[in-house]
Length: 99
Image (cartoon, rainbow, N blue to C red; front, side):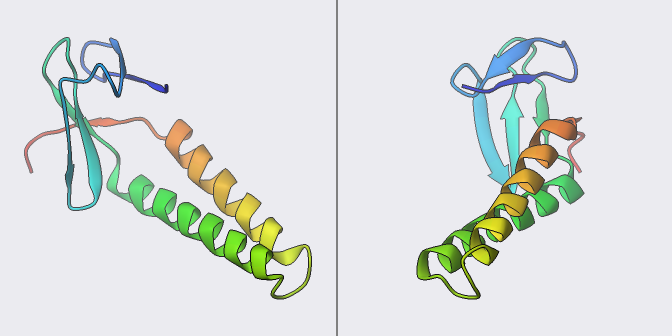
């Protein structure tokens, strides 16, 4: 299970140990079980991550049905997966300010 670091108290929190989770306007929010502070993804990072996941699924479907050649579908899927994972790991979470 992936561990996320709380931006306030720097406590490592897994999704199973989180006090609460919710999704607001398509952005995943997480409440730290240690300090009860809400944190969320950067909005632009969430959009890029969702774009990467869409490319991953599209490339998988193209590869399954072998549309556009043998290498095109898997290549699109790999690029989409790399975009999604890099965004998820590379962009830190922000503290929720209520706006």
